[in-house]
Image (cartoon, rainbow, N blue to C red; front, side):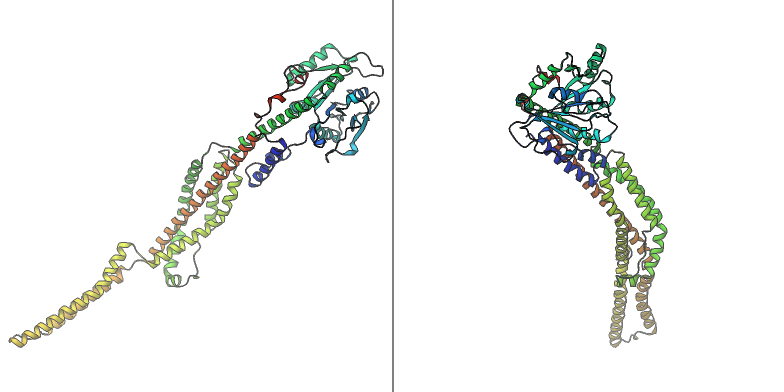
Length: 533
C-alpha cells in the first residue's frame, strides 16, 4: 500500500510525541521528527487537475538573480542594484489567470511582491525571485528556507567570483535531492573558461553526473549568451507530465529522507540485549545488595526480636500495637544504590533507561512498606507457633503426658488398693500399709511433676522465634522486591518491543517500491540531468 508523505509524517510525529513523553527517545530526536516539513509545491494550490511549474532563481547577493527575472519578464519587476542585500523579498511572476489559493501562514504576505503577465506561452510557469540566502539579515535566509519546499525547479545562479560560495553549497547539498536543478553562470563577460570547468567539477562532486549550465550576461546592453537556451529549457518542462514526474519524485525523495531519519532513530532505540540478559543483570546486582542488607540488619533484628518477645501478648492481641521499624535511611540508600547501579548497567546496553527509571521509581517508595509488612507477618506467625515442628510435637506429647501419666498412676494405685482390700478379706494377709501409701503418692506426684517440669524448661524462646520470624519476613520481602523488579523488566521489554514494532511500521510506510514506474524520469531526458540521487 502506498502512503501519502504527509500522512506518514503525521503518524511519525504522533509516535515521536508519545515516545518522547514516555522516555523511549530523546527530546532532540523527537524535536527533529516534529520539525519534519510536509510543505510541497502542491500545497500552494487547491486540488485541481494540473498546476503550474514553480521555478525559482536562487543565489547569493549580487550574482544577478533579479536581473535574469527582469530579462525574462521584459520589464523591471524585481529590484536590482548595488545595495546589499540586493533582494530582500520574494517576487512572484505569473500569468494573470493563475491564482495561488493556499498561501501558507508561515510565508508573510508583506515579504511577497507579485507581478503578472499576459503571455499564454508562459501560462504554466510561476517564476520566483528568492531573497539573497547569504544575507546577514537572518529574516532573508529564513524566508528562503520557508519557500524551498514549494519549489519544483531551482535555477541556481552564481557569478565567476562567487561560484564557490560555501553557504550556497550547504543549501545545495541539503536540498539537492528534493528539486530539479539548472545552473546559471551569470556575468560571464567577466568569466574565464577555467572557472566554468571548475564550477562543473564542483557540481560533479555534489552528485550531478552531467549538470546543465548556462552562461549568461545581464547588462544594460545584453550580449549574445545562452539565456534563450535557459528559457527554452524551462519552457519545455512546463507541461503536466513533467510536473507529475517531479511531484512523484518529490514524494519518493521525501520518503527516503524520512525513512533514513527513522532508521537512525531505530538504531538508537534498538539493542541486542534480551529480557533474560536484563533479568540476569538484576539478579546479580540484587544478590550483592541482599548480602549487604542482611549484614546491616543483624543488629536491628536482635533488638526487634527482644522487643517483640517482651510485647508478644500486646502484639498478638492488638493489630495496632507499636512496631519496630527495620527499614531505615541506610537500608533505603542501599536499595537505591542497587537500582541505580542496575540502571547504569542497562544504559551500557544502549537501551533507553528513562521508562525503566519511571517504572522503578514507584518501587523505591514501596520497598520499606513491603519489608515492614512481611516482617510483621513473619513475627506474628512465629510467635503464634513458636519453635520448630519437631519441638512443637514434643511439647504436645509432654502436655498429653502431663495428663495421661498421673491418671495412669492413679488408676494403677486405685487398682492396687482395690485388689489389696479384696485379698485381705479372703486371707489373713495384712491390708496395704503406710509404705504403699507413701510410694503411691510419690508415683502420682512424679508422673505429674516430670512432664510439668519438662514443659516449663522446654518452652521455646520467644526471642529466638521472633528472630526467626523477622529473618523469614526479610527473606520473603526480598523475594517480593526481586519479583517486582523482574515484572517491571518484563513490562519494560514488552514496551520496548512495541516501540520498535511501531517504528518498523512507520519505516515500512516509507517504502517506495510500489511507485508506478511509468512516472519515473526518462534517463535520456534533460530532466534526468537536472536531478541528483
